[in-house]
Image (cartoon, rainbow, N blue to C red; front, side):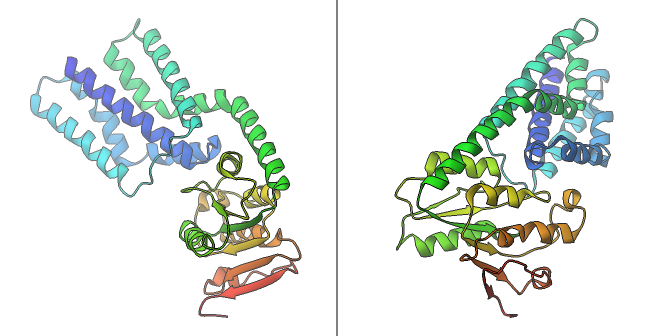
Length: 305
């Protein structure tokens, strides 16, 4: 009995990690997260998990219990494969705290009617909804924090005499950022966004906490999951130079079509000032076919001009 509670508790911890990881990848957007959740619930190994986990409690056959435990380990391994790491941000901490409090409350309530095992099992199965509920509860506070950080970053980037380089694309953003930083840091005081801090909140945090008054260049990696998000970042940091590395089919579940992706990436180039410079990779067919309306200087790179 005790070991079955332990196994299902470990399974619940995995479920919490898995759901909060996907919520972060979804940009904390409940609609995008719900789309992923619906498709995830229909995956065969998820269905098998839901059906086999109760055997830990309701069978006396040791072999079956061992097979169930081995299958749980197998699912852990295949779902973790090729994943990025969960970024342990303050927002993740707040989400975990709220979801754990809600989960404990649900267990206490359910434990009056059903066993502890069944309570933990039900929370494991419906943990995705628990995470959505936690995200909704935190939404007003997160909007306040985001607005506060964004306003402070706009004020700081405006007051400091710093040239901003924006980098976007479906692939190669981080590598390009590191190359540019390496080339420039020997001649200028350069600040860059760390790791994959490419969202408005991540860039705001970098500006507020890292940017110094004597920095000369700020390099910002820009990511997007939907139309308008690059424009939101450019309105905030006002880059003078922009780089588009490559445009491919990425985040199609939110962009819906390749043209929306192209238009979103070129929000960077279209936002540059008249004395700015845009650098675009013309080896990419999706970049070549876009008609730039901005009259700033455009520099092409690649084998195809």
